[in-house]
Image 1 (cartoon, rainbow, N blue to C red):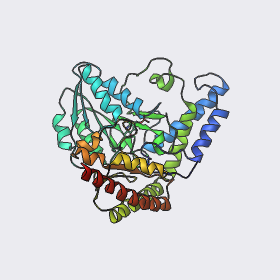
Image 2 (image 1 turned 180 degrees about the vertical axis):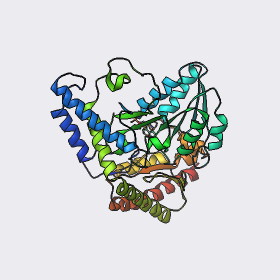
Image 3 (image 1 turned 90 degrees about the vertical axis):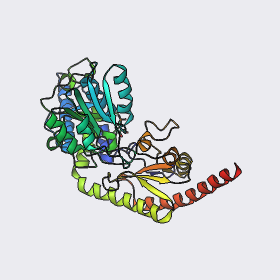
Image 4 (image 1 turned 60 degrees about the horizontal axis):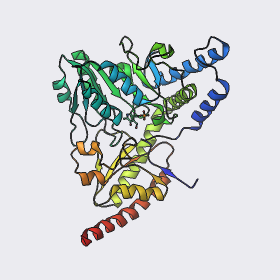
Length: 386
Ligand SMILES: Cc1ncc(COP(=O)(O)O)c(C=O)c1O
């Protein structure tokens, strides 16, 4: 493969060597079925238990409160669909959630569930007062993402959890972009459900989990065997889960150094872009943003063309979430923050990981400078010809 600079780490991250080794070991040495009452099954159960402990440690959860799923999409659907399933149930969320929740809202509404998608302000934060104001005795569940996948804006989930607790309302957090990048302690947070995916912190794709606060009852989404304490049927994805455990273990061990490294790389990138390219703006909350993400608006540039040109030069980044990227529509997250269509189209997300280097950042900025100049010239020429 030719050299690649991967700056699309909010879409997914490359599995660490330790993770690949854990997956291979699970497939070669732990091929028993964790539900089998034989020694192979016992070995597989042990691996499952150890992996769960590693994941629980990363989010400060008590033993047995993490249930493995196929990822955050399933975990989001599980918590929300099972709590909000009756006509006249009432669900409160925001209008900048990931598509796994945004599209679920349409389904819930079609099934007579009342859905309130709260607006965000110009930096993408939901207003705590609005959450408090909208909660009523009819509210079944509040769900807010912790960190926005496009802008990195951090939501005030601690305050929302407190309000929900005081008002006796269940609270779900989509923490897909937070786990491994923010200190997460689900117990002190006092929330009821937390969803996340392992591939956002160098684990394998197709594995994630739902944390369920002990004592909270949640019906299964799927019916079948008694796996995951009878709540998530189907033979476990043991290799994936082993990889998730290894990724969680690595991140737990290196947490402080990782956060520092991500922040340094992102800040190096952002300040170089701001210094070297005129007429660029950062989308998102300047004060409360995840350490690895920058969403940059290059005024007068066709963002889709810029992403494609960067891709040709080996630099991977995105215009919006990977799950909505195939649609040529402006980002609904940026539109919800008040950006015009043109501004949203001119915006690009760069997200770094521990596998990036300062040299890669320098190289990207230099290529970006040339491409932005070139595309702006093209925009001006096209406008002059009209
Ligand atoms: C905030 C957020 N929620 C949910 C998901 C869905 O994760 P997965 O596709 O692994 O199920 C993602 C993935 O991009 C995300 O960023």
